[in-house]
Image (cartoon, rainbow, N blue to C red; front, top):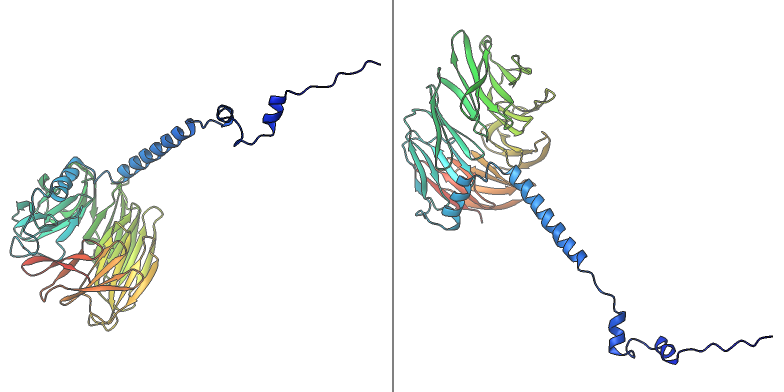
Length: 415
């Protein structure tokens, strides 16, 4: 039998097999360290950049009306660089008569329409624009970065941005009510021959694209959605002595109303869209939410409580009402509804509320010369002195507000 040779081991390799990395020569240790690929890091960076770009595109799309060259330039010049600094508030009102409903905010700028002027003010009270008007009863409507000013009972109107006039026009009949959406499309209710009134929808080039004439109701409130395809209008019956409220949903692609709702003994005060297909109607005795897509309506009765103030906020989609429990304006309940028409919270107070304003989750209530700040959960966040002649309050931030007085506009800070 052939004898097998004993297997020999390379002593050097055998020794290295049992050595720890600390005992290995440096050159051998470096050979065993795995190399970290740079590709995963590059891919992570590329993915992060793509996500940020997508976020930026989505943000720009949903805020495209606020990212116009004019808006960016205004913010850069008036707010960031402070090129045109005003003397600060209070600011004297231009004109002798300014209605509490004719003051609003557009992209953090204060705008108002008095009997002589349409004015835009910066946060430092610098007068960005002052356009003279000759309307005896001007009405201001705002949406996005545009404002519509029209002459109630006359034929003239104008469409402005923060510091430019886009259009000035005249209609064939006297204007009863009107509206503008964020794209610059407008809707007018005017007098007309053979009917009580006529609704006209004008596109952003101010060309008439749709009309509807009313034979049963005098329309006193109108709102068009931002999609530019639907309007909700409200008015009072011309045939019943006791008064009957009618609400119309008009589709601009149909010559007949999509829906008509009728309610006895009520009056429309205001209409607004909180989404493209959810309209809110504030009436004297009830609050209504209309789904213009399916034609459903939800009614919230005030249960004989007196409505003293309200605010429909397009940014948050909420509607806030102040209802007096005592019937004389005092002891107000503040009701907060979401955009779906659901009552989220009721804040009970013992004050009389003459004006209220909503900013994000904050609610400011004006009572005489004092304003109180709450969040939507009902927590009292502070108070501010507003002056004895305070007529309206407009929140401009989480704890700041503009206050409309008889002859001036001032600021208030909640503490």
